[in-house]
Image (cartoon, rainbow, N blue to C red):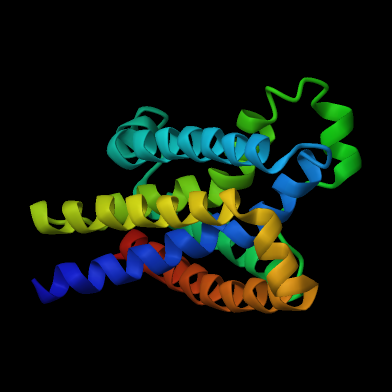
Length: 207
C-alpha cells in the first residue's frame, strides 16, 4: 500500500509538471484572444479531453506500440529523460511551453482545429508527456500501481482542465511574475525526474 501511494505521488507530480497547465493556459489565451469566457471554457474542455484520450492510449498500449517499432523501455527512458531535461531548462528560464501567437495563427487557419492541434497535441500531450506515462506504465507492478497511475493521470488532467477553464482569471490573479515562478518550480521538478529517468535507463540497459 505504501509503495503504491509513493508511486501515485511520484507519477502525479511528474505528469502534472510535464503537462505544464500554467504555460498551457497562456497558450489558450493566445489562441483565443477574441473569444468570450464561455467559448474559451468550451475550448479548454475539448482540448483537455483530447489530451486525456491520447495519454490514456499511450498509458495502456504505449509499451506495445514502442515494442512494435523495436524500441526498448530503457532506450525510451533515456530519450524521455533527455526530453524532460531539455524542457526543464526552458522552464527554469521562466519560459512556458507554448507556441508563439504568430506560429499558431500561421499554421492553424481553422480555429476549431487548434483545440486538438496544437492545444491538445503537442502543448498538453506532447512527446515528454507521452514518454512519461509510458515509462511509469512500464514501472507499474500489480493492480495497486496501475490504479495509482491511472488515478494520478486522471487527477492531473482534471486539474489541468480546471486551470485551462479559468485561464483568464488565473493569468490576471498570478500575473506574469507568478506564472514564471510556477513554471520555474515545475522545471526544477522535471530536471530531477529527467536525470532519474536517464540513470534508470542506463542502469537497466547495462545490467
